[in-house]
Length: 433
Image (cartoon, rainbow, N blue to C red; front, side, top):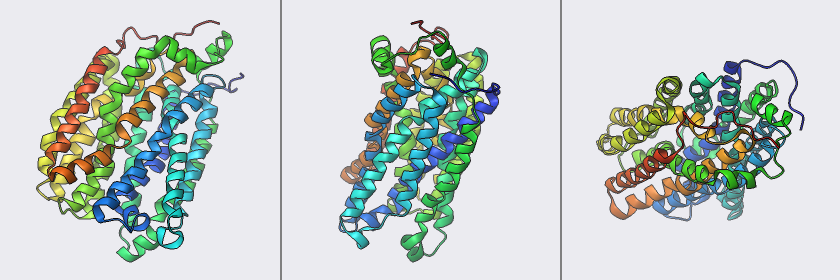
């Protein structure tokens, strides 16, 4: 159970490395969402009607989340046994290979039904790899930080989600400048293939990190558990359930904003595809700047309090956001995304890393936080775009989608309220063997 050797690196360097790693992984995961909205219905489900094609495409998007809990269990188990750093390297490689292969995949016109089947398989591989990413990256940042700066440094891995969104959206924005025929023929593949370059950069950075000092303490105290997943459920089942419920709204909102609203804007609101992608890019950049600000603030005023404020703001923004989008104005669509994705989500998202991870003891922390997080992804995020598309198809109104978002926000408020206070969380607890 040896940990990494070498001089311990600074908390800021670890946090930045975690940010870059999660950015790469979320770029890989999220370019699929953009492609599901803009490309896959035509290339992989051409036999379906436009509405059915979108539903099927978003369904394959959701399939990736099904593999997340398995990835969370496997990566969490070994992350609590052999270390956080090594598992993060494995997750990065797994995600990168799957993404590049999607970029090389033949379409339905070339190989028929095998095309959507292979697309689904590779999406499952993506989901498995990313299932262990967030928990490990968050723990590396939080566990290297001092107790009074964990909110700030814990926000860096969280920043990877909007940064990955911005990168993925920019990649598709640039590719979409091609004529439609070229974009559909080969241009859509470029963002997937570019992942190979990002993976190399991420690996170089992660291989230079040292192991988490709290995991090193677990090893030194001979407290490494033979079955961390069993211990996590035995000691922290309540926290696992509460983490899943608390994150529910955040995951649903994120994937509605990133995946569904691009499709909604271009098909229902009549907004130009390029303008819609640019709006997502701008909103994501705002989020990247806002997350660490709220993370730092939480170190002074309390992480749980800011988390609940963020969830309430998300719910309050829903109806104004759809009212802006339904105007059909590209500018107001951008304002709407900045409002919800860039600002309203920031108080909750900025403190999520520290708040959730510190609810678990260090010897089972990777398992506990990964399982809670990935369970929420399956229950909420996985089919959020599909549910939104189905609601709109059934009602021809955005109000049904808005009420859906309000409902998941209410669940997160209840779960967040019941989470252990960040002032009493077992921040450095190591159970001795």
